[in-house]
Amino acid sequence: MHFKLIIALVEEEKTDALLAAARNAGATGATVLNQARGEGAEPQRTFFGLTLEMQRDMLLFLVEEHLSRAILETIAREGEFDDTPGTGIAFQLDVEDAVGVGHQIRRLTAVVEEKL
Image (cartoon, rainbow, N blue to C red; front, side, top):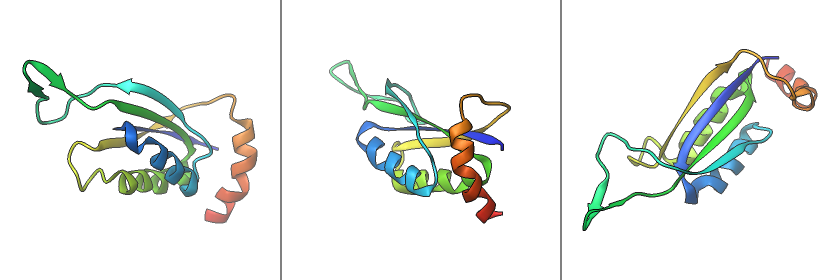
């Protein structure tokens, strides 16, 4: 079984909704890193010299490759990434190898076989 790593950088108030949506789309878990910072195409706004920036969370999903595109699209739709600039981004990377995922493989085998 092969995996992909989906990374989503989102506004912190959307984290719980995106985690639930990803799980409903087939993700078996996630890791959340809080208080990430970033800058998009537009520079950060300032107010009296202080930068106004929203806190972001980094969501990491290790998912089976046949489920990854559907999960990625679900995250993008739920997060309104293409509809509202600055709400977040998500992308996926190939994972060459992973350990400690035996329980996921056993759980996902039947799900993936149905999709193939």
